[in-house]
Length: 355
Image (cartoon, rainbow, N blue to C red; front, side, top):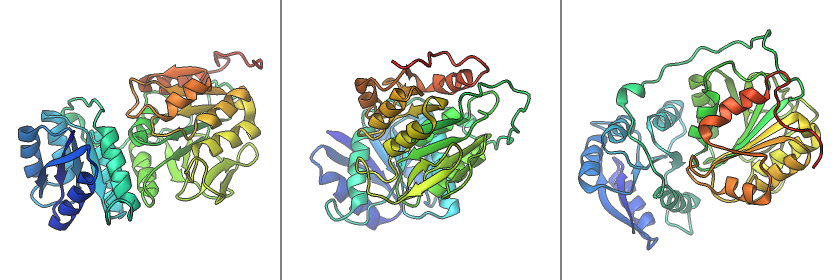
């Protein structure tokens, strides 16, 4: 049985979330808090397996509550929010810096009649097995990094033209860690498909833009790719590359039940750029991205899958590894340095001969 603490200042929503969670026989709500201060106290006393956390609350907001919990009694935390306002999204994604694992929308109804309710159940069950670490609050203050200009004197491997990254559950903190690694920013465009609740991708882009040295935006159809920029797939659009340096957005049918689909992005990169690209598949449930990473591998691109130990959910990378799609399986903290190494002049580190 997975024991859950529900935190929300609305009694109606607390009761709804409880009903949603307890509709699954594996979930039990052991407590409900109406503000962050109550949540901190109840977490210490009840020792839940997972916490669902509202952000905007009286007395103590969710962000501060997460800081306290992750410093004193760390637990897997799922942030639940109803609005996509700039302020709300900024605080929600800052919560990931503080230690929350994922941000999703609040349910509007019961499972079967509301997709957000189904997502809440699936996410809470997935997060229950995640090991979290204690975090010092003084390390969680957000310092906006300088936008590092491209170092035009940096010797780079000109054979690599693009990095493509795919992620699902647990992706935002993983992408954040890769982008915020020490050193020069990677001097090629980076395109990203992140499965995320509709309406949240703009907030994710703004958070990554503000907290990393890269320029991060939501991709636009026909846009030219620029080195040192990161482009996120928008809601309900597949992201592909058209020619070596342009973005193509498509509203064709979902692939692997997803639009945007990681596999569709990877497959287009394989067709257009072949061995002049790097594909990275990060944490996530399901199998989207695995077949696309295999297409990149067969096109002789360099392909990386995140390893089991560092994944929040070892789903998509696991399938890719089983298919033989990954040239390398890396811990998350080594992926950023590995990308930097691959882009170093004449240091690609892999054979370009077809296997």
